[in-house]
Image 1 (cartoon, one colour):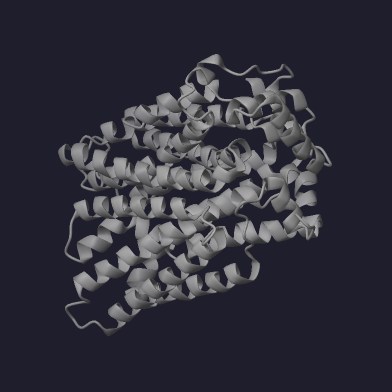
Image 2 (cartoon, helix red, strand yellow; image 1 turned 45 degrees about the vertical axis):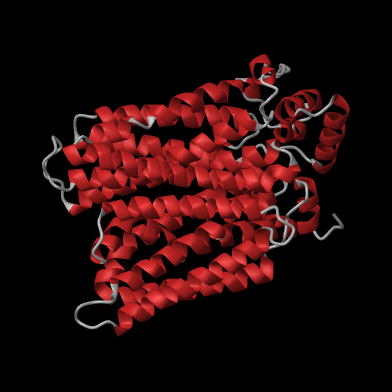
Length: 473
């Protein structure tokens, strides 16, 4: 693996030959496929759980706790991966190696969960697949942000979110086709269609030039930049020199040293507050509940599973809207976050009001659907893609991998928390208080964004680091 060796990596001829395609496309595609596989698990597993919950599969009659383990197994695996990545560090493990590891974990997890003869075996497969999710979601925004041209960084990191949503839709469709006949194993196994190209591309793409520059491997960094962006030798040399100039130290040698570096520097603490704060508000404002329980919400409103597929397509369309606006000088990252989260707050407050004022027959199905759709659309314009974009931009290069690990762990941890508590809170306190709680958290998120989140459109990663540190970019 090129990331762990000292040899220079020449540009891959196969990738340079297709001059009609942008040189950054393979690098973007391998990271996006990692996101699509996360989304596929969300959509596909919801259908699998419906089948296994009927008690007619070879796994037997599963109770609510066992179904809960199956639903959350991949999330616990993702949390474990985030913790491991932070502990191991990236001193010798580059972004390319991490992409290859994610593809391998996805493949092993898919094999185990689709072929496992017993519940413990399937649960093991869910956890291994989750390790792949955690690894992919850590490296994907990092790799895209560090490899692609500055002027495309916002659009392409945001498109990674679109890839996740596309995967969700694929998972829903696979479940709709195969779960009807009880064939839940095929739903899991079809993830291999996305894993194969991800694995192949992970062998061919270049290492992150910024990862190489931090380690003093400037010649390799210039070659990687030329391969990923098609930069001339002179352009590559200038960009790598700028990267090296901001790399005033070396990668920390231990997790303790890395943690000390993150929390001892005011600049690093500010970046961590911005990144982790966005992640927590993204999840705690109710997104996991709407996503993982979409089928149940629509069934309560009188609709079926097909409605969830329709919402998935709508999510994809709204994410593409955000992709178009994130580099627009009239919008950018910060306004999209504020507008989107404000819209989420209004939609959640409206849901709370509908359930609070509903009679014995319940609230109007049409109005509930309208509020859910509005929530989803606003989330996909702001929090959905922009959180991961900001997370990939705000951290200094020396701590970027470890800090994003903390952000990823916070993401999956809060996701698990909201998912586990949703049904308890819904049955104990009712929908009105539940959605009212989410509305208040979303409102707090708006104030947080206004107070702390900077605009990073049009800046290089090195300029963003200087801005966070209070220097003139």
